[in-house]
Length: 209
Length: 210
Image (cartoon, rainbow over all chains, first blue to last red; front, side, top):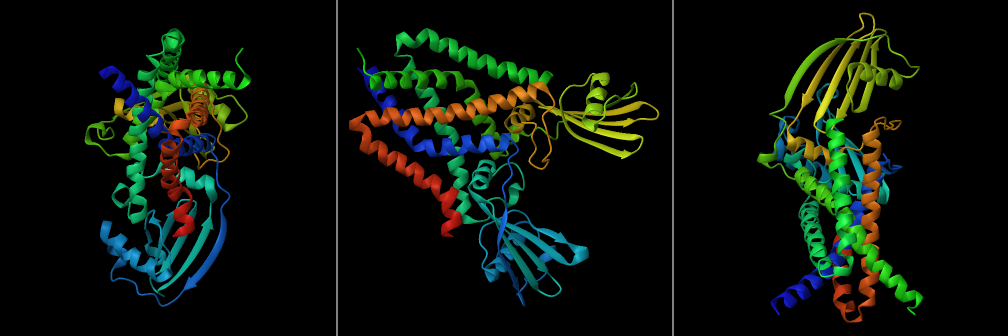
């Protein structure tokens, strides 16, 4: 009786969580293939603007970490640019600051001249494929201290994690459900073993050459 | 005699099991390594404990018309295996090659006059290897003309495609099976719609709406 209830619950959760997960799985699967084949987006500059007499926060070029991000955000508000600040590069010799600002599939490059307090904004449309690739790699291991500086991107961190946990659950529950199919057991064991061997064999070949 | 639709449904279900079971280990590998990449957990911090060793070796004049061929010849002579990441000719007599495989990087500086190579080998622990497996495709995005030159990388990249295509099949086959369950259509539609809206908001919505 208890086993029956557990089976039914597992089957339903496998179905519903799997359905919720399916767009995320498609997104990660397609972006994997794009990354695997060195795909590059065809960036098209769709907007270019020059802005003058900006209010630049004091000592902007000397600020660090969260303070620097906050100061950059003050500039971006004046330019009408929103998105995740990828990084902030100070070019002291040229007295300029470079700020790439990204939304999945679109990148605005802000170049601020500290002397004249002018800025140029180039907005590149990179398209659907680049949106998938960007989300696949976000947040990632780089520039960790500034990641999630745009509030709208923060939930993606949780969704990316949730995707992993749900994939683990859906695959484990799938194995549990398969155990109730005696007719499929032998072939299933063979395929699971073949998959494990492919994985372990390839890892061994890659690591040990 | 089962109808065509019955046969499609049966084979779709069976292939869903089979593909899912074959991919199980690989999907778990990529899921867990993805989690590692997105979190800077202290226990998995591998870089400070890396092991760097250097050694020198002599070699015979390199053969090959292209840099990549000469680099491959150098690796063969030095008994080093891995994916050639970058080759640079600094001066007529200086040839640099970077070679990587999960867990190990070789930086080779070859003096083509003295026929002497200086090799720096950097290796990391199991967490470093584990994490690199997620990103190691032999195809850096920065290098447009890059090509894979090591057999294990070529097979690994095919396996990555297999996993991706397999996952796409699992999604499509599950949609087909769900649609056949009339009593589950409404609840399933709600779950699917929630997924599409939450994923679509990031893929398309951020760019279009904000």
